[in-house]
Each structure stands twice: as C-alpha cells, then as structure tokens.
Length: 307
Image 1: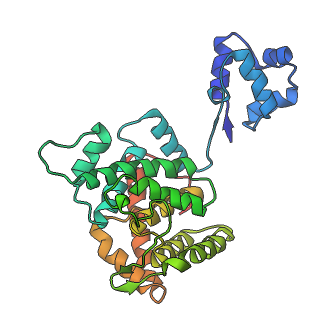
Image 2: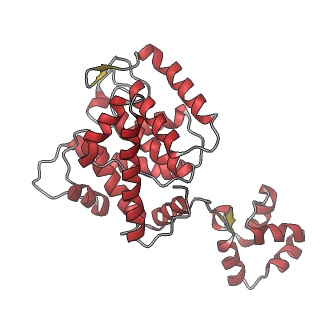
Image 3: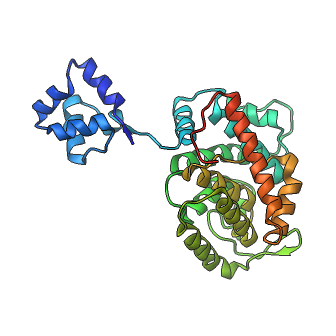
C-alpha cells in the first residue's frame, strides 16, 4: 500500500486541492481516486506532479507494509526514535547473537555503542568485537530495508559481507568476505558441507524454500537449521542465519524470535538433534517468540501478525 500523506500536506501548503491539481496537469479522476485508495501511480503521472510541486517522488509518497511489526520498525528507524521496538531489537539481537559466537561486549556496552557511538574508556575491548557490533546494527537495518524481497544468494552473501568486512579475519587472503567458504570447517566436531558442494546445496535449499506457499515459523526454523548444517561461510554463519530468520519472519508476517545467549545450550542441542527431535529447537524458538511478544506488549504495540 502507498501512503500519499506527504503529497496531501504539500498540496495543502500550496493551497491546492487534488481536483485542482488534476485539472492543471490533465490527470484523470481515476488517477485521483488511486491516490485516495493508496494505489501506485504511474511513473509518468508522478513525474508530472513532482515537476509541478518542485520535489522528488520520495517527497510525495511512501510504501506502507501490511506487516505491522515491519512498518513500526521502518518508521522508528527512519525517524531515529529512541526506546522503541527498533531500538530494542537492535540492542537485544546484536548483543545476544554476537555473544553466542564469543563476542565479549556486554549488553550495556552494546547498548552504549548503539545509542552514543562510543564505548566506556579503558575497557580494553577488542577492535573486532566493536566492529562486529556496529556491523550487526547495519545488517539489521539491511534486513529491515529488504525484508519483503525474495530470499536470494546475493542477499545472503550481502549479509555476510556487511558483518565481516574490515575485520581481522577479512584480511586473510583465503577468507572470502561476502562469498562462500574456500576451506572446510567443522562445527562441534561435526562435518559441514564441503566448499565445492556449497553453491549447489545453497541453490537447492533456496529453490525449495522459495517454492513454498504460506511460509510458517516452522519453515523458517527448518531453513535455519539446514543453512547452519551447510555452514556456507568460513565464519559468521550463526549470525547470518539468525538475521535471515529475522528477515523471513518480517517478510511472512510472523512474530520474530531472538535467540538469547542464556538459551544457547538448548538452541545448539536442538540443531544437533534435528531432524530426529524437531520439537526441542521448535520449542526454544517459540519460547523466544513469546519473549518478543512480551516486548511488544511492554511497548503497547498491537501485533496484527501471524503467530
């Protein structure tokens, strides 16, 4: 849906009605009706209006998502709102996802970096821990911006690039930033997909997933597990995988879940036991989804989304 509230405000400031604008520019009444219904206008019509009002198309309208949570996140992100859902998502997901992977920043330090772009002096914080925190903030922004787009290999690789560029590991000649791994790796002693097989495995995973209709939280969880078992990148797979899960929840109108560091034991155990014991990981993710719902309730946000 398109919101033409900015256009209406500009017309009011210029002392024009939509009817008068239509007559001046030779726009049909049907087009005026589209504005009232929030329907998309043609590029040609927008060009006429922008030329008359001396502004850009972005100054006249904006897309409104059918997903209440996604729209709140976008509104708060664009407006720089402090203390809202976007703020808490950034801090809580970045802290927990990074801490699961060994980042030593505390939640308070993570919050301080997000809120003030600084860290307490004299803490001796490793540079990469700070970089990965700032990069994770940007990766969440990227997820919010691209939430409604299809999940593709390019998007997945872009998330990895945002997270890992400029870090110490990224300077290694064989560490493929924003691309699939070049060397084999183990997870908890378990073999993952060999580098040569990763492109095909990822292609098949995405093809099967994107062919599904009415994606549910169970589908998102299953994709996450298979992605982690493939382990397509040299490093950063857990964080990329959890960001993908966030994106797909927002894309399919599902309340997101943030895996907390305190529950990483159940999270890892659930992935290791998949698919034999699917219930364990599913219960952990649903429990974390309930935590997100409680956060929304604390902020007085109506959900209007799939459970």
